[in-house]
Length: 158
Image (cartoon, rainbow, N blue to C red; front, side):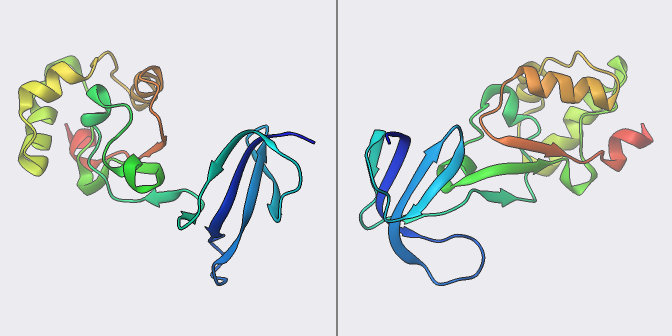
């Protein structure tokens, strides 16, 4: 059987707390289909000799709320194995937001993250007013990672 992807010779860390173990991993239809010594070939194969093979990491405290607009790969966290990011931390979010409040919310993020307000205002579409509209706008950006968000108290107060 030919798997879609086989990662061979890696140090597998499964996230359960068990010791790392040498082995292979096969993926079919986006799901791990074999673990250990994978028989057969892969349509695509990666040699992970000397490397760790891990589940994706979750970053529970990011301020990528603006950066996601111009960097949907959400670097550098994606470079470090993060596959899920939580935005909206420290009470600073961009939704809900009335059209007249965009500069105010961008200014708050500027003070927290030292990202120029102009970059925030031009890097996002700002085509929402409610939180659902904000999530729709983020989805249209097609982020490379899974994204979750908090509704920050700053935006809610205004």
